[in-house]
Image 1 (cartoon, rainbow, N blue to C red):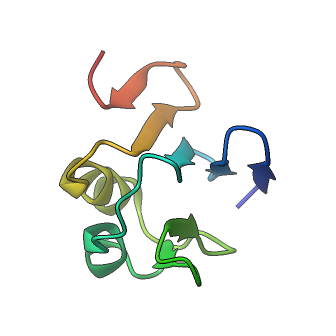
Image 2 (spheres, rainbow, N blue to C red):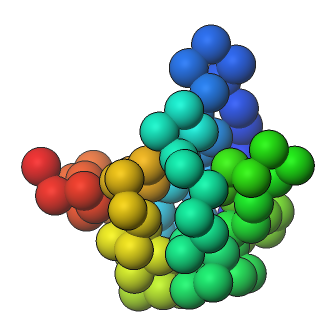
Length: 91
């Protein structure tokens, strides 16, 4: 895990693994928790029931992508660090 940071103005949580950059838009998040069920070693709900990243992020690329895809409101963005391509949501 490289970095986890919060940008206060936009309420976006970001984190990185060697392979992925993960962004969670907490304003969009509805707190359903599917990400934390699918990838419990990477995601959890904070005290406001919004998705956030654990440190370090321990789930593999496939599991993190599945967790992002499970989000009902597409609040989780996943970007491939090697290619720079956004993997989810598909653009």
